[in-house]
Image 1 (cartoon, rainbow, N blue to C red):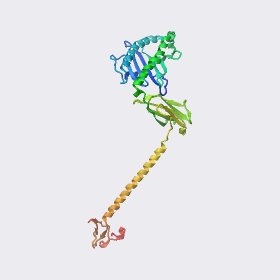
Image 2 (cartoon, rainbow, N blue to C red):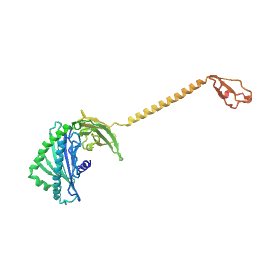
Image 3 (cartoon, one colour):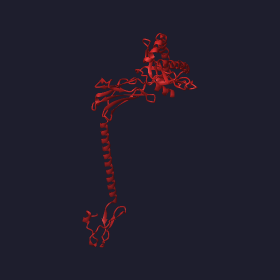
Length: 382
């Protein structure tokens, strides 16, 4: 894992050309590091098939693992790659001893030399392209033009090294033969043995969101996720026209679950959202997918109205139940008749008919002689 992370960090400056649907790649990354206190430079090597790490090597580890990371990697190929890594250790350590001199750097300082090589094939397995390029201390150093077999220097410090290799066309021919032959051969074997992982197709899920920053600027973002393989195209259209210059893209990134994610953003004027459409193309889609931003305000308003209506309905139901229960309770009490009153000022004794229930009515200021005026209580008792 350390080798994997360190390699990604050190190779962040290398910009790879995005491949298209149906293509596959085999890539090797080598990083050699020197610093005071190290008896010899340290080398880290990582191998990728497409975007999947399949092998790694670290010269600082005393006991190199002999087992492949993935079950479908052939053991003989693992042994072969381990031997290549060991041979590359000596070769690239020598490069780190030679290259600093072209920059007037001390060999004992802190320096890095990096190399990337590999090949790509079309969906039918035929050769698409190959590449080999190197870097020194984080800057482009030399790259091979595979068409002309010329070495292209990345800066003035690489010119001296180019002059040394100018007449050595055998080096360029070696790389070209490797990329078109051996590299393609092993990539095809990888794809065949790991086809359940490497040749599967997962279409993307796409969502368009709207964002407003503190300055009031409006941005639409088209996000695709859950797709495999990694090759995908996200293009913003305004009234059907591609907005390439106005679009901000991030590179395709692993999602952590074996799939990938990517987004494209475009700045717009508020109110013009419906003029913009995101077009998504991927191997897992039978045809291009088009997505617009869907305003959520109407849906939110509708939901609020529905919730309010439901609450009112619930309140009405509860009120109805309460009234029904009250009426039912009053019905159970039946009718009652007033008994003879006493001449004293006592509370009248009222008997109820129905299930032997009784009711005591408190005295409410009856007149002299204890006789109550029924009109004071809203009518008769019976």
